[in-house]
Each structure stands twice: as structure tokens, then as C-alpha cells.
Length: 247
Image (tube, rainbow, N blue to C red; front, top):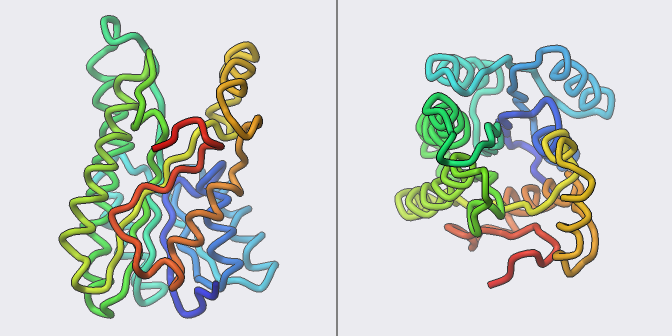
């Protein structure tokens, strides 16, 4: 699964799933533009990739800011010459029952999780069209497929990503550009670490594989969808959930 000669932009790359994706793509030979808000963690990631013989650069980015997305993509293309793999991973939660949810919490989750993916895709698509090759991968969630009480904003944003994925796949397929989504289930990350132990144990009982997933499980799916081996897969949602949701 060689990605030598390709350049990947990963948002939310400083920790969790994004970090694992950046490491996976770099290990396959891609140069990685790692983008996130935390400069210190990005620098650590870049050091780790370069120490292993890979190529990477850090780009501080708040995906909630449209101008920052535009300037970051421009800077990454200026440094690496192109972007031909985009992983829209950045995401936040602002959980609350819908009757109590503040409009600001709805807006910030939709902006960060969904609108940023549209904006980033719009900015990189020209680079992909030029070389008639591209991979766009959106990190959605099992909760975008089945819903979750207290997460109307998060579930809506992740369901929206699935629709966005399919629409883009239809728009750019003729140019040898694929667009797919990866839908993780319960994954051990800083975000899920905040959940109560009781909640986690109840969740594991519903997972046929009997365990919580790892960030590397998700990164492996992203690595595959980025490769030539997935060249005839587009508009697809790849479930990485241990069997929590089937069908």
C-alpha cells in the first residue's frame, strides 16, 4: 500500500484518530500536512514522522475559521506542491438534550464538524483535478447513522458528512477522484475518555467483537481508502465499529 509521491492533508491531526491517520499515511510514504489548533502537539507529531524517515509539516489551524482553512491549504500546497489526499477529521462535541441545547453549541458543532469539511474539500479540489487523482475521506460516526440522545448537534453534523461524501463522490468521480467516509464506533480517544465507566461497559456489551476500538483501527481504514487498492470504491461509508451497527 505505497502512497509514495502523494501529499495528504489531515485536519485535527494533533491527537486521537487524526494523529493515527497522519502516522499511518506517513508510514505508507505520503508527505503529511498535519493541521490542528495545538502547535506543540503538531510539532511532536512532525518530529515523530521525520525521525522515522517520513516527510511532514505542521500547520496551525482552527477549522471553525474559513479564512484559516483557505490560508492553510494555500500554505500546504506552497510547501508540498499539491494535496491529493484530504482527511477531514477535525471534530468537537457540545452535548446536551435538544430541549436545552444552546444555539451557539449547535452552530459550533455544525461549523467544526461539517462546514469545515465542505470548505477544505472546496480548497483542495483544484489540486486533485489538475493531476486527475484524489482521495477525500471524511471521518463521520456511528452516531451519524443511528443517532444518540444528547447529541443532536453531533449526530446531525456526522449524518451531514455522509450526504456530503456521496454528493462529492458523484461530482468528481469522472476525474479519478474518490470520496468516502469512515464511520468509527466506540474508539478509545480523549473524547470517549470523558464518558462514564458504566456507559462504556454498557456500550461494550452491544459490540459483537466485545471491545472498544483503537485509533489504529480507524487509521487502517483511512490508509486503505487512500490507496490504489480502493480505486473502485467511492461514495461508500466504511463502518469501523466492531459490529455495533450492521447493514
